[in-house]
Length: 425
Image (tube, rainbow, N blue to C red; front, side, top):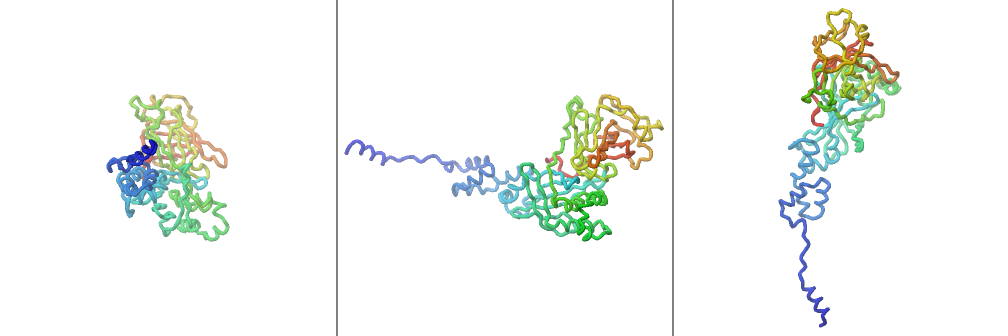
């Protein structure tokens, strides 16, 4: 036997050690590694062998994904069997919808919150009724895992029916298309007890031709009903755009007190309800554009100033000099309109007396204010540009009054403290 044959025989008799494998690790260490996986990697890992498939089904691994998706610890599963089922059938696709949205139908708008509730995602609309009252909640749609369509619960006097949610992942928007838009409009029309026959209005396409006038006729605090009705006038869909609210601390640093707090002469940004001017109760976002301007943008909207548009601005560089309530001439809007604008420092503004001008159709319980600023507001930015001079009055950290001087009309704005889970998003 030659030397090569001897060497080959020895190689055949050698025991080659197997390569180290992931499944050779202790079970507790293996599970720790799997906890570091994202949902996609965990599912793919479970496809490699029987042991890892078994481990990948452990519900505590999927519970973490669910908690992260909905920002809730130990979420109630409701009728869902497991966290894995909840994530793979619902949250994997729709979990990113959770948050606040501005609903758009033409120039009109509203506020919707998508939140998790016992195994489902619910779309809740928040309607302003009165300035001093909490927002009114109504569940508009419900999404359950494994269902192709959403359940539409938009109107309390209509039976639940099907609708479809379409996601736009790149923009974060989604649209809600109900399969019964005509029935929506008809039900809303009937609910408001209008005299005209709906079938005639629908046949003649009066909804599309006179949608703005129809909106004005409806009750001022029923924004969601109007939107449902008006979706029949536009594209049948209600488009939902993510609404990012400013944090209470989103104030230019130069305006803050030495300790970092908001001075009493200013108001922290946030979500407000207000009675606007001639337009009923609406929703607004207050935020600082810079250290010189506090701006109010519309969440709801109309055909004069659409949703998302700037409504009014307080010019912080121009505080109004203290006005004596005993000076009769300042009891009229035209006299306030003639006040000279002078630059001043916010820190120099002192608490001052306040009184509404005569003939004002608004009652306020405040006789003092922390600050008063010159400003400008928009009455119409669609048909023609119409600005109005105004005074912005800070009563307290949550209350602002605006005097529309050219129109001789006041409006009151209150911070929304109850309703949507503003701190969650």
